[in-house]
Length: 293
Length: 323
Image 1: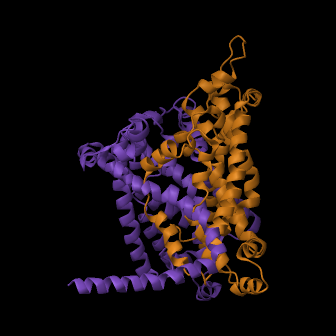
Image 2: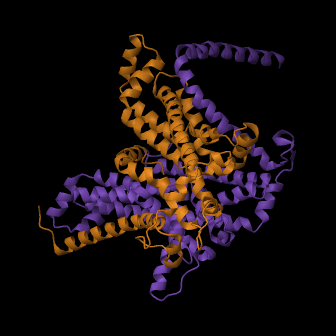
Image 3: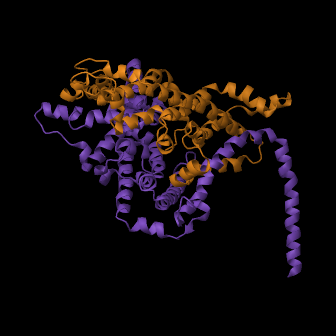
């Protein structure tokens, strides 16, 4: 190893400083929001947001967890994420596996049929009318699930994984009398578990973070997913007033800001705790599809 | 004359007769595989292809009572209405301008982060830093919007608090459109730059280490190696991703902009993009046909752009084009 010059060391130090600063910048918003949610409403109004709580209080969480809204929304989001991901993986694998079988004659036509949907979109208006007027999915939980069950991009990723499996495995199973469905569920899926995990995570995250569809199609408050609940709370103060409607103390300040922050923290909790363990799968998936653009 | 038509008919019949058995034979042979593809094909048909037929609404005076089939056709009137309004310049300009900013600064930031990560030595420091900078990417835009308020609120926001501590005047961010291209770029970088660096980092770690060793032997400095080895090697990836991003330049980031800006009309001059405009025309104004016509223009321009860009990408680097 050649000894590094002073200039090299300086550059390396600058890089360490630079990436540390950027990492801190990435973390600070988490800190302000978490600290805000643990402060008293009065302290935020007087002192503004701070990196550490000035007047510690669990009031916002107490109110939030006493009310049924957050539990309902959590229930909706968990249902949509779990059921959506499982169904989406079944539909996606069921389309991806046949498309990886080279002897399938109409493979290319089906490929193009899927691919074209990535190029041309019918647009928001037609989709909106179709779902709300003609399919009757409005104000049902399924509107958050069914239209998102197949994502062409994820499907092609999955197909590429299946493509990379040696075809003789399937062929020899067939000679032994196994049918295609058996081969897919019992042979192909078990040997592509890392890929399944990666694509499942992509689907799960998309379902977990869904809010636009809820804004468009859902007006029943019992069916609001978490992310849309946050949007609603951000847009009007009625939520905080409802939470605090039972409280009658002199000089009580309605926790408009802190309840908003507490809801946000409760929503991102699972992602923050799970992310460090799941990160490698996301990275893997991104690299396979690195030319997505 | 009649004879030749009859002959043609016969030829056609023969072709279809020849084709039929092989079609059915194929289906029978692989019926389970085709059966497996059915749910996906049906879902795509309903949620992707049916809306494509819905573009006729753009040429109608859509009446919700009459529905798509019975509403009267008005030709290009809806397009005319949009193209003659002053909104068209604003939303098209904002869409393109914001996307150029996002793509330009996003690529630059991701590239810098990737180069830094490729030079760092400490394993744990690197892993922790990478986890932190990629984390924001997984938050939904509605969460990011809450985060943004904690910095930008006039009275309580962290930025104005700090300014006031120094005896300076605070900014009324949510009332001033002019700040928002910058604010949106910063939020975008916070959200996506770390995650975007992974692709470049993969390219950089694919570079043969012997090249760097040889350069070190010749006395190259760290900066010299970055400039003359890393950057040229990563250039094709950068160009390709830039090119592909250009294909989507006519689509605004609805999720981001609507979650953060929402219905704050004061900020429309710099933040209203085609997608938010279409949404408002549909949901708030109820002008279904106009919304559809704007959406159709967007779909067509978007389609042409994606196809063109892909032809270019294919020329540029044959293995990496999408199709």
